[in-house]
Length: 132
Image (cartoon, rainbow, N blue to C red; front, side, top):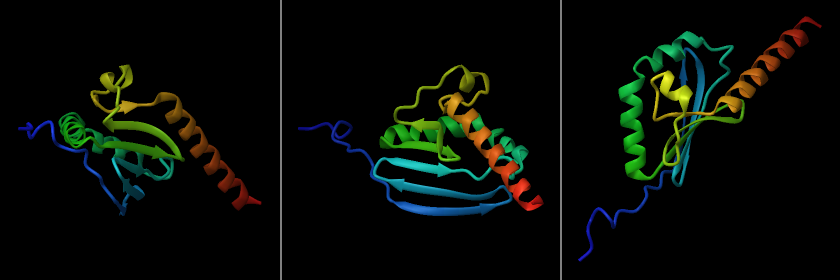
């Protein structure tokens, strides 16, 4: 007889959802065992609202992580086309996550910095093109 806990299969998730709020449009897509959250431009959004959302962070992140691991699902957060954070299966939180008290969320520092620079460069280009 097989143990029911060992016979569980990973969860397959499919769908697409667009959320619109004060910070802009957030696209959530799910395919198989990977959920992607695409954030709007942080420079155009109100960064304080995003950081306020993370003030709920510690318990919510831990609960979301546990649910993702139980379902064998990975959630990735994208900004400017770059994967800046991972939650759930395969996430390895580091010093940044721990110091911000958002572990087990894995923050990818270099992709995050590159995305912020790309985002700022795009904002400057838009301003320059409007001024010409």
